Length: 549
Image (tube, rainbow, N blue to C red; front, side):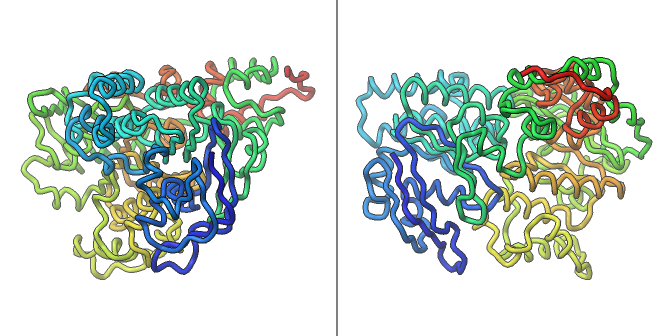
């Protein structure tokens, strides 16, 4: 289905190739996961499969790329679009029309598909991706995750031979991600659809794919069946990390498989030993930096937020989780003043935000929106940081090179930000809003597009800032990030806070949002691999039982 020979691709005005001597084959009906660090060339390789590179991006391409019998350089996107369905990293920018149903049907109309067939195909994908309730909604009114599902539907409705997906679950809540992946697996197994997917959250997809292709620095470094590849990849999901530490072989890919390896002693420890992390937790005594009291907001007569109460103290991280469309992003916009609240109040550092300009509020609050491109204006990454300092009248502040280094942006500091990958743009935006060191950070999906190593580095940086007294409120669908970082967690549904408390308690009692380690040891209170290994090693008997395999 796909044959690539000695592909080297270089973007315009770039001296270093994005892809270097890549040779790669994908058979008809395969489901392949494309993984690797942010900026390693995954998106570029996917764009070569439908001719966007080089026909849209420009640059130079050496080697041969053949997809469905078509030479990509000779035939270009017009012919390739008849065979390759493509969902890019920015699904919100792919929409052409305003209404969900019209957007999904748009490609079929361009192909002059008969009306009856068109209606049947649109109805089929609406049901497949649970979009029927949104069919008459305006695209601009959708959440990021809902936009992502619409973009996938618009690609699937074309009935392509190859479906190419660039991080299709990055903005989806765990349940929506599971539903989408289940649909893709069904299409792959029942219809033989060839699927190529780039994804950073490997735990969501590894059990369903045939093999993993791993890129680093534009080169393919691993290309093997899933379990073999996971032995070679340095940074892996929590379940795989724990399995490697405890020498479980063959590697379990699911919690169900992993449970067979747990010994009776480990099960006893999990059930009787309170997590060492929980026992060390003390109530934070820092001053309150952010208080939200009975906040309500309406959009076109629809009550989007209903009497929300929330607070963030100095030195703590608070997570806000929930299904797509629950009102999480809306709440952050209300806090920073981008939306006018209907009732209730917001206080920052003891001062209410009512009547204050957004620019004034942002002297105290760093706000990362769901779409990082909204913050990128300058010609280089370095200038983005300088622009923020200038806007905040901090002209004399220098020495933000350490921040650039901590965010892993050293090699791209002189690049145009919008030419970077989504993960790199996300880190640039985080740096731009935090370079002035505001007391409160509001982050909307901060790990979107970040590989696991970059996510770990970001967590370390945020912890350092919290030690210095900042307060952090972040919206995310990444439950592993919540487990690593958040002291307290709020769960939102249909504009209301339905649960709140210590993160161990909230995630432990909410199966839908439970991390992998919690699902493996449900009675333990453990959220992370570190917690599990610490308690297991502290309480392990001298002569462990034989393993159950």
